[in-house]
Amino acid sequence: MSHIRPPADAPVMLRADGLQKTFGSNQVLKSIDLAVRKGEVLALIGPSGSGKTTVLRCLNGLEIPDAGAVAFDGGPAVTFDSTTTQKKAQVLRTRSAMVFQNYNLFPHKTVLENIIEGPVQVQKRKRAEAVAEATQLLARVGLADKHNQYPHQLSGGQQQRVGIVRALALKPSLLLFDEPTSALDPELVGDVLKVIKELADEGWTMVLVTHELAFAREVADEVVFMDQGVVVERGHPDVVLRAPENERTQQFVHRLL
Ligand code: ADP
Image (tube, rainbow, N blue to C red):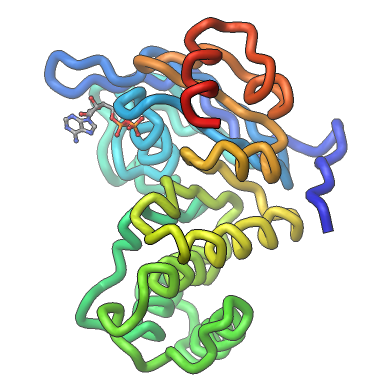
């Protein structure tokens, strides 16, 4: 099944306006605007250090932007300034879930414990219900027999599929993927991309930071190219990845494709 674009009138699931972030004297995000409609897949591409991970971390409340606003599903915007507390930013974590480059699984917890930690401890859902859902999700990604294993007993591709299941178990409105395959051996990349593609086909809304431009072209509805903390170009994958207008985008995609 190929990814069906969400209809033009699909509601906006995520809106970020004017996100700015400075670390020390390094202005990493210079005013980033993003909008993602329900069911849409947005691929965020750009050179290393351009600010892509920082965008995801701001959307997820892992970093507090210095300025800007983030709103989910037409709800009230969370606005940021120099006085914004971590607690306020963490509200965003109830709406999105992140899949990390290095999986970020708890090494001393089993696969199952890793997955149910958020639903049970943070969302206060019933343990039996969380276990049942985790079991179903694990089966879906081909890991039905791995419940009681520890992360180090799994391959990188298996660990990342657990990372994806852990995000899904939170039932977020938005999935954030931060270069989900870049730590994997090449032969393990395909299994993880397959799961991400299936989720896109199912209609999950997602923002995907990736260097896999061929995959971005296959799965994304919109591609955003960032460089040095600004959005340089955005549009349909066939345009941004095949015939970009901006010279910096051209250089970047020609190097990688
Ligand atoms: P990308 O994901 O595009 O590679 P990042 O968002 O990871 O870019 O990083 C953008 C810039 O911000 C880099 O120069 C990086 O060193 C810097 N940076 C990111 N996080 C921090 C941090 N916590 N403290 C200081 N500098 C940071």
